[in-house]
Image 1: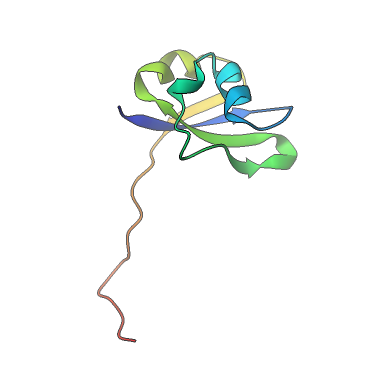
Image 2 (image 1 turned 135 degrees about the horizontal axis):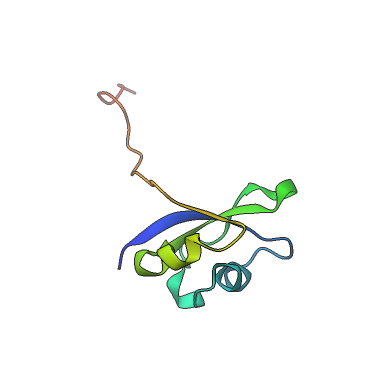
Length: 82
């Protein structure tokens, strides 16, 4: 199951359940290991990983943006000696 990165506005408490409700998906469509990551809590903006098949319908809802790229971050260049 592939997940994509999306942002969601959560005016209330930031939880997987609240994000799933706002996205219009089931809580099982969100990655619980990723969780709900604050991007700008003062603006109620959070990031979640959504099951790819559910992301298209979710993207059409107000207060939702994405999907966005989520590339793996790895070290750049050769390892530095200790």
